[in-house]
Amino acid sequence: MRSSKLRVAVFVFPCLLLAAAPEGAEIYKAHCASCHDAGLPRIPTREALKAFSPEIVNRALVSGAMRFQGSDVSVGERHAVAEFVTAKKFEPDAGAQGMCAATLSAKPGVVFSGALDGHLRAYSTKDGAILWDYDTVHDFETVTMVKAKGGSLDAAGPAVAGGMLFVNSGYGYFNAIPGNVLLAFSVDSR
Image (cartoon, rainbow, N blue to C red):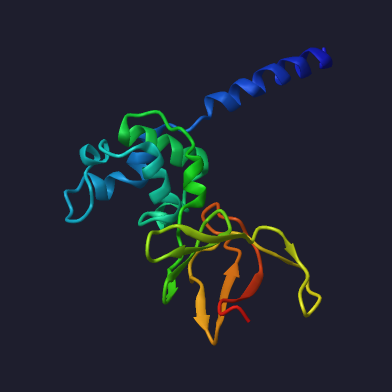
């Protein structure tokens, strides 16, 4: 008798997990409708959100204007609400990982940009070409012998001072890549 109850539980439990998938309409009603259905200035209506792709809505919930509201819901719930408001199927956007999220810094001829994928890039101000690209997502040996790992470049951008470029690598909020390292690069060929 005991083993038959166990078999029933094993077969029923996965079905319960499938039934628990988030519903976009419910999530929208609980977290979004109070502003997006209120006709408030500068807040797009649900009808206006249909013009966007679900990937753009998700990006706004992860690292854009709605990132604080998006931090209150799960990844699955963000995808479900993005599909609901756009009436389109969510397709994960690989290009979004390289999205420039941090503040830009510049010196004559070069713009420095950090991205959510952990890459620090230097762009030409003449034509936008990538002059160099450094992936910060790995382990580092530090001068203090403290274990350090690079991650997403977000929040504060790179800083240029005294011929050096300084950047904090690691941003663990909103599904970004956590880390704990401050990197320094020479930008004047020294």
